[in-house]
Image 1 (cartoon, rainbow, N blue to C red):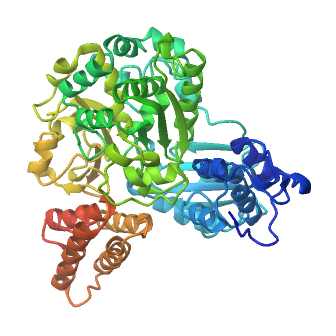
Image 2: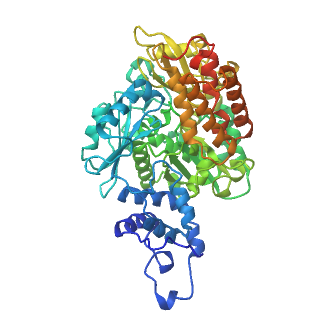
Length: 638
């Protein structure tokens, strides 16, 4: 393939070394090594093999940015030579992600979250102060060594407001700090700190529970399932995991065999916990029965829905459970390889899961013969780079494959043609975390918890104006009011204004909804949805109008732009919300509401994926149910 490399652009030695750590040393001049005129002057080799490694494109881009701070034209050329990818394709991928930069920038970047939970916790005040002290977002400070940017949700909502600090170079490090104010951001930019992000406070409190999951701190909640090891075990110790029941489920799965494991999952009636609520057993059965080989298991850990952080807590605190669950899924679906795609804003979760995979592999829990049995399964990890759309399953596949993270048309569905065009079982972290429980207690026993259509327990991400924010595990059927009581209720002197259920892609409900049972069927009957498990609480002093504008801006920013209804609709929606908030409706408020309904309907009917289809739900419900932006639901924003 004639790659048409960028003229005059040559990678530095450091950039080449970074790429070679991902792709290996080049074997020939055709893939970036020194050209040997006699043997390679007229023949080329390795083209097909190189193109088969395009899935290394995103890791290679990350490696260069981590070393040099940005992705230079020379680095793009070298990556393209190594992987036989046209430079236009590589640039299209690099420019797709918000965390990657194709322009030179400071080596240290502070990503300051200004999304929903952080916004109501004071992020806007902090950003205004940073603008005064450091200049506008992106402006170099500290003699050009650092800069700050606004960021969408960092998944640290229980400790809002949050900061992700990235430092490139030979001793690169990514770490998340929360809670922070402007002074803490400025101080962090001036620090020198090396190595992977740690959790000193969490390590010191180990075995006594985790503040991110308040139930684990209370002995009265001894019946937890998914959270029972959170804050109680060393997340980097395989022996500690086994001492707390780890890998008993995999041993039972191997004894049962694939068909009986699948039967247990079907009997459990486990529904997907990522938002779509598709029956997990049916999905796995379709993959297992597909004659096309190979099959793949994918764990979707691109938890980017504002207000969501449950999967982060599981990956940080109980990563071996996810490794074990993926292995069970591999056995049941006839897959020999699994992939976990984790969002780029989760450095500690990435570190903990990669450590768990490496230690499981070293001890025979992954590899060519799992636990000495004739069953092969291994896991690869991919780090996202800041794209909400990659939480959509087919966009995630494209991202792993080294393409732009844009959704595919369906059908075919993933069980028919998913990752690399092969049958794929894709589930999110929480869904998979239920697998050990199902195997140990049996599918029917699991189904006995909760309600008939909504079985088992559910993790909810409770944040906002609440006494004890964090991840809570409750059986399906608990009411919204009961969950808020479990989290300590609102602070003294505050009254409930609204609850955002399901995140930005969900909807708002008012105080009258406290009796809603938190089940798939219960929220559906109330015109809402559980979505990703977000329960973001707003009190009577919160700026609901500002929250709606932030949601509109979020969807405008995160639309991948592939389809016109979403690309244009999210832009026009944000403009409309901004006009209403400013009190300057175009043609009158009734005309604006009619236009909003028309935009929402067009996005629901014609968008390729769920982003456009759900981009108006929270805004419409906030206006109609709660009276935000001058609506009739009971008072405007504050």
